[in-house]
Length: 422
Image (cartoon, rainbow, N blue to C red):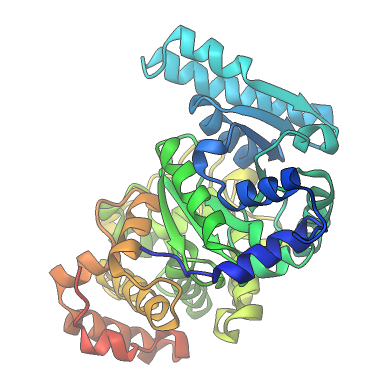
């Protein structure tokens, strides 16, 4: 799992430019500082700045607090910070009640938490800065431009974006070699996967520090070697959303009939999960993929109708299901015969082969590791494909393509060959 090696002379040049210095004419102390910056390791990281105190922000902050790091939690208003601190304490309370942390560890973690609405104060001592603001490229670029000006020269700047290009975000800074993607999964204090994403100009050193740091807080990091929409986990799952969107458009099977066929194999069936996450979130994801990857991802008018009606799922009380009385009960006796679990697995495996073909990841084991730890499944798509058989899955893709003739549903050449080793 080696990252791309950048030639030493280029690396040193970038570092010097970033600091607005050159070796020529700088003092021996400054030259030593440059070399120390270049050799930054995870062990050098003592202080984390968490920008954004929402669900993801305070969840990530909690992970680093439990790891023994000093954390500055910052948001634009005190009420958002207060809500984030309450979320951290609630997580710690649950861990203490279950005996996962001691009272002493609880107190020590909270003692390491500092809060502020002042961005400059939040980052002035930071070794590693993590941004978790809303998923809007221009907003993130504005935040990163400020972080670049205010953070110490050695600090790595990380974005928790789930989809947006790291290379585009890095353009707002004068330290693109120190800008990375650092995608945690919700709830961050529970989920193990962290996608460590390399932008076009991200240095090998920055990726290694971030990777090692994730391991230090007991996460499972996976390096994404090419900045690509959705990275690994979301990219592999996105074609399933397209299928659901097209099923709604076709009018059959109904969401409950489809979910009834899948429910015996998963804690939350696909349409149920969309309701839980938010139909608006799913639609925005499809729109983004349609813009940057393929028009095949464009959401159907059928799914857009839910958005326009304001029926977004659990958070509004109604989506594909009625949530007003709690979690919906899915009648498995209504299971459709049109689709089965292997259709969904086939879509995942097919998209995962595209990641290999595109160089987003060069090891199928790493993709399996990401998928297993990002969603709680015991197996990744390639392990499942080996068990089921590639010919069976190719046939399932052809069935989907016959119903919905979109290019993204066509089996890849790698899929047809079926000789991936895991």
